[in-house]
Length: 206
Image 1: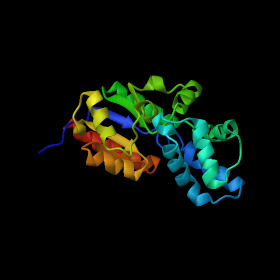
Image 2 (image 1 turned 90 degrees about the horizontal axis):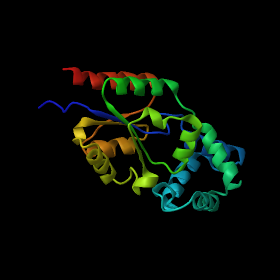
Image 3 (image 1 turned 30 degrees about the horizontal axis):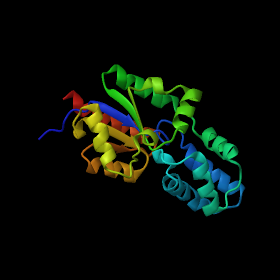
């Protein structure tokens, strides 16, 4: 039985569309403050969920307060947020890829566990206009740790799961998407990703 043709391609934001500002920013802050570097990104991800911030149920202040309490991180909210933002740098080749996919008729979208920061970053970098859909956990009230998020997104696209290709740099998210019937690629590096994407989309030509 042949696979369904891919009709939509969804990109994670941090670590795919842009350099991973959240992870790298927290590592940098931890190094400069002589904190436990290896655990800081995990602490950050846990805090962004536990504070409710990533699901629109808490504020940036709640998030930073919780992370400070758990790790000893220092700095006011604006300073810390600015350090994270600096690390989110657009990968121009990804934007060119998105444009090519869109020109070929694919629906392209962002599917990200993010906060209202994504809107602030768009004001700086103007990338929303390159995409047909923006799915942000902050406004959906649901993140990628909840498998039903993928079903919700597929239903919103009015497609079948196998018609949607999802790209993320987090293996757990990729595995969850696949378990829900989506096609998925784990982003590891530029060259490997481009090769796998080309091979995956070639199937649509047959």
